[in-house]
Length: 144
Image: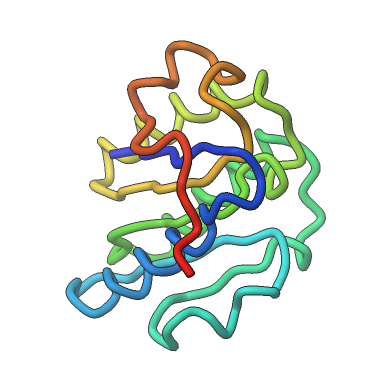
C-alpha cells in the first residue's frame, strides 16, 4: 500500500507521520524505517524506528532516490513500513515528478509487501489526478 498525506506547509503532517511510526513500531514484528531530509526529527522517534537522514547522501534525482529505497529493501527482508517525510524535499523534486515515482513505489509495495506512507507539502489540486487514489488525508490540523 502507498499512502500520501498532503497539505500545505505547517499543517501537522510531520507530527502525524512521527506518531504513526512510533505507534506502528510497538505493534509490528518487522522493521519500521523513517526517511527525512535532515536530522531535525530524529529524537522524536522511538529508538526501534530506523531513521535515515537524506542530507548524508548525495542524491539528486527521483530515480536515484528510488534506487536508494530499493537498496534499503534489498538489504532488509523484514521491512513492514517505510515512512518518508517531505517527499518533494527528500527527492529534490516537484509535484510533476511524483506520478511515475509513486507508481514504482506501488509496484514495489505489492511485490514485497512493504507499506509506504509519505507526506507532501501541496494541495490536492496540485497533485496529478492519478495520485488522488493514494491520498489518505488532504490537510491535517495541528493539535495543541
